[in-house]
Image (cartoon, rainbow, N blue to C red; front, top):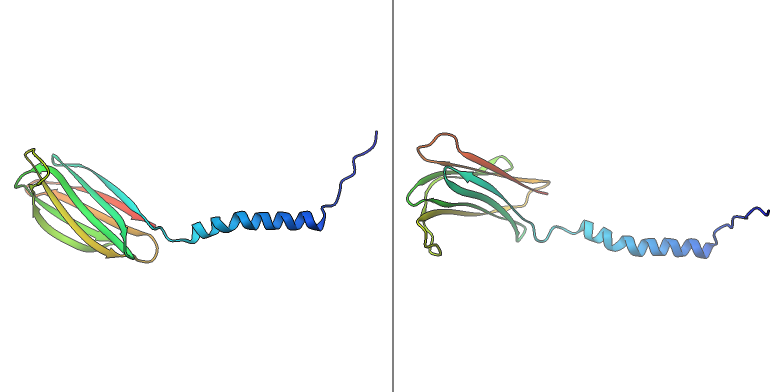
Length: 144
């Protein structure tokens, strides 16, 4: 029985492999290097009988940051604190008001701010607490 002989790859076959690899890898490298164009992240939960959420959307070199408290008793007051990378940029007490779109008896609090994109991972924190109650609730959104 003859022993099979191994062929040395030709220069042409090696060049074809390099070109094919380059053609496949280039679009992947471009996609990995391009900035996130449509970041949308949202987190939240329930707190003192209401729903709360923190949403972060990319917007013009920064982020549209929105804190929402929904289905709260109308007229209830809420302490709201928002932070970006540890720096407080909102500290307020807001009253839950009727939402024009709702027929129910719940109230809403909406706070919108724009924040510039910083180097590295951006960390946003929302803390809400119904005035007159102990504790409060917190959520975090991280955007790379």
